[in-house]
Amino acid sequence: MKSAFALLALSIARAQAGTILWSGFFNSSSTVANFDKWSWSNQIAPWQWYIHGSGATSTYLGLSSSFKNPADTTDAQGLRTTIDGTAFWNGQTMERTEVIPQTSANLGTGHLYYHFSLSTSSTNKPNPGFEHQIAFFESHFTELKFGLISGEAGTTDPLLRWDIGGVSQWSTTLTANTWYNFAYDIDFGASTVGLWYSTGSSPLTQIVANKAASPSTNSADWHIGVLRLPNGGTNAAPEDWFWSGIFVEQAPITTSIAGPNPGSAPSGTTTTGPTTTAPPTTTTTKPTTTPTTVSTTTTAAGPTQTQWGQCGGNGYTGPTVCAGTFKCVAVSPPYYYQCQ
Image 1 (cartoon, rainbow, N blue to C red):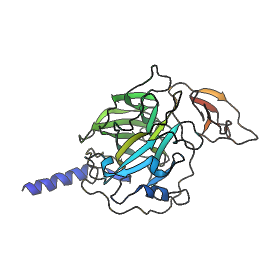
Image 2 (cartoon, rainbow, N blue to C red):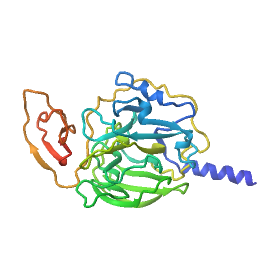
Image 3 (tube, rainbow, N blue to C red):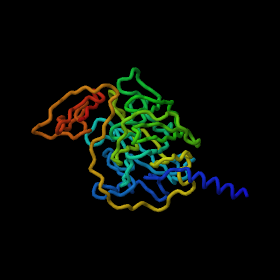
Image 4 (cartoon, rainbow, N blue to C red):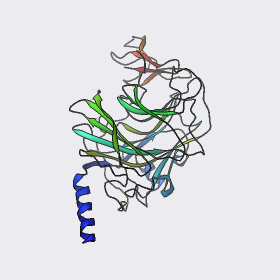
């Protein structure tokens, strides 16, 4: 009888879980070398890998069973992302290491939940004197942030905060060796965003009810990783961030940190063939104040920058003129300007 009740409970739990549209789970045979198999001519699911510095992939990414939330039993391994003094991508002035979903699924319609767990360590701990943008979308309609936000008074800020449109909705002090579990509750039809949260092995609960937002995604612009602004300087010391339980599901939500398939970490490696994801455009930061237009030039004899591309900032040497009707806007002056 006890066994029958256990099976019934498991059946109910699975019935209440949503439909998985995309999963970033890592099986026991996954290696960092798998990321290097992806390219724009060989778009192998489930991950895109192109936003990183000039070093070897193993400098910026790591996979290990010790990198995951122990409560997550759908994953066999967790992911480590690292930023350091070499983590500059595409001539930009901020450091960044990010992986992005590679999928043909539509991750931008209906009522979806974007899941992930996040942790740091006392070794290679993040510097609270810099602004970190974490688990963000291309338009930054929602994201996590850590550290001293550009324009904020003081020299450090220990808070991990969650934003909608650049406005903080929730925060907590970031503590090393603690697993923070999140699900972005995104209703694309209703144009709202909410937040589900827990720590350790506790099930997710909604801590911020859905609020008006401007959610949008092309299904391949959710950045799992960290973008760090210079905030007046740079620091070559490495920072490590650990990730687990990354997946996107259609409502209803899976609240268990064990994941949608507890105890059954996927086996084998993914060999999904190429899809038709568009080439990358430079990803940028969301302004927290009213943007200031610094250039309105729309044509030039030299190279121009595309929408969302960097067009200015301390140390930047790339194109400063925006293509078409886009304007170069101060996003985090004097460090970063973007074509909008």
